[in-house]
Image (cartoon, rainbow, N blue to C red; front, side, top):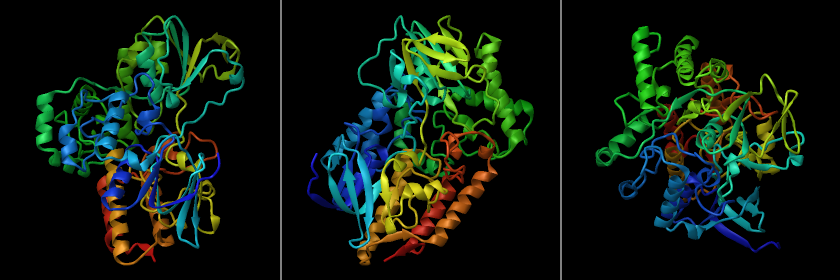
Length: 536
């Protein structure tokens, strides 16, 4: 396709998930001309692509939602405590329609490069459809968990059965009845799809390398009377989210989202009762049980032992139960809320294949060889995870001053300031990206966008054109992020929080783990009068 004429705008946004939607909204509110490019055919980001059976959010929807407009908060009615993919996608569409955002969005378009032109001090953005856009400011809303890790197995091209990825699920319904189905991967996506199709497949074989800690989701239909009480005091809920570590508050229970004790300060009976309450509550509530679960090995072990006991109680075969029981520090890999995942292994048509005992050798025309055994399959589903935080931006040719490649920069070690920008890339921002606080992603995108757009307004008032992180402040932020990360148990586990799932990726903390109150304090101080930046 031939190149189009250069289009000039104030702001380019890459991605139309929840962060991109809000960035487009906020740009319009500040009277910036804005162009958003989205690879999919619709808004929604991860909730557009991940439409596999069982896909569901693990933060309650009344919190996993926008806070910027109370009219929106009041008018949207969720049907479940934890909504499924289709309902969350409908919500994203509603927001885009309510604020007339689609007129600024171009779908089925993938950005291939973003290059900073030092003469014009603008970003030159190109797409796979031949678009050329010149922008003052570039916002990457590409998603924190959005770049799939493609399956890379010997012989896969020869396999004659059906192949699917949870992260790129087709829109057409897939028939599982009477078929031998294999699922490779037992992270969050794998767990959800296994739970959903166990009773639909003729046979289901689960290929597991590393088991996950799981907790019952405890999903149910919305209690309208409870929702009314929450909506009447939505401001109080949002305030409490801001005080919490991760941006969710356990609002459905009496359990505190603001832990104040060490797990080792209380008696064994009190600790067990606390864990039981959190298992009954469901979702992500164990993250808030005690102050030191992710800091102290002994405290962590108390929760891990409890979780393994729960696994053994739900799986009938003790050998299978043992294989499903993780041996690493709990919460250092993603905790996976689920519905009847463990019970699936009590079914006669479901088998667990332990890849530590029998590694995958290769695919054949008819199936897969593990160890020295060939297993016939009609369908294989890959739940092989994501290149977290940096992956989506690494797949775009991003170049800053002196044509420096962002991907090359990060191959030497992750750099950022406040988890929103990096030195040498002026007027270039990312949302929910590397070194951002581990937090409710919709609320974090609002917070980051508001900071940045307010800064752009201040720059315009002062006749400034360029905002960039200073070298000194960036180094301090990287050091702080790594210091906090190294205080936790994350480095003691193999996990994507450290970049371990991507060969060759520098091993370091990819999230800011200081908690949102600390993150907010750091950001507000930096953006106050823009004194922490180079502004010209």
